[in-house]
Image (cartoon, rainbow over all chains, first blue to last red; front, side, top):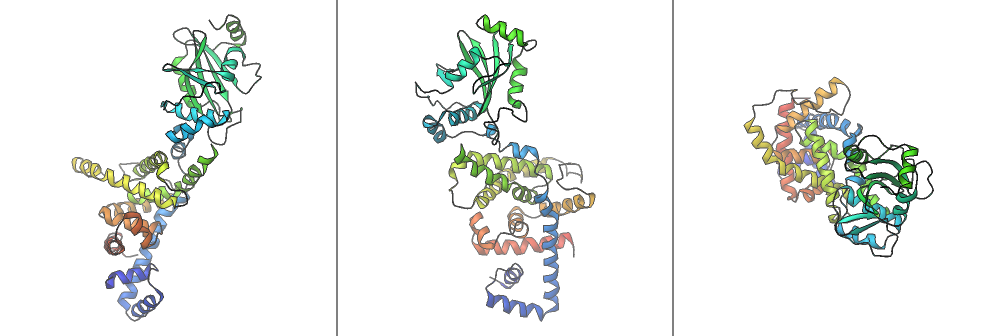
Length: 231
Length: 165
């Protein structure tokens, strides 16, 4: 360390006590060095003073949003682990995976009550989710899955949005099945909360907007569609 | 998935500091927030590479610094093509209230921007972020003597630019 470096290391409190004492004495005895030390301390304070308020200012929403589960890519390890997870966690893992449009090819073991099933290259609702889509009315929720809105898409198929504890999504009728069109993880901290304080997931809103033809069905329309087998 | 939340929570808690570091590296507040966002996204994708029990802050700072270096070449090419930007032309989201504070931040950011990259990062990490020489040497993979000499040159140049306080 040359003298300059030692001088600054002293200012920064990086010297061993003996060296620090020696530098301190040297600076004290030299008005020019004392002045320089003062200037650099002031510069340090000015830098801190200029940048520190950034660290105490509110963080812009977009940065927090970048941390949200729906923006995450679930890694393969987590996806594999999902096989042995309880249903709720499975929801979360699958929802987070699908939200970014990446399905890692994890097959849910048959016979489980996983809410989604893969057939060929398509995903279909299964178990409790399938049941809810088949029978639930938005006005009369009964189970873990709540139906949101029901509408016809531009191809004339019935589509329904739903909310489950770990996420929300959209499924549209395809033959006698419900094909998954979107699945979005609930924000951290909102899982298990049906009320979804912040309203529908914005991704889901966008998906509905881009597929809906005309208006959503009203209560009577929803019931009539169910009675006709969602044709 | 409870086991994943500590990572995201810790990263969220680091956001204010990461933003401050980004501001000391970047040309303007908008660039700084882009850099912060890119860092968060990269950190999430690289989550498996972080060893629990080690310092998340150093790890995240390193990601930010590397992203910034990666974009440095593109930035230099872009600056060379474009006419020099007028002060105040790039209006970012200044995180602080008050005109004086904004002018102060702008002035210090421009001074920092005139430092060579390798001096700027050392000045930012030590004088603004408060890391020790040893920590910075490990973070940047540089000998401690190199850190120390870059710091001397950087702060000497800054003092000349910002003027006597």
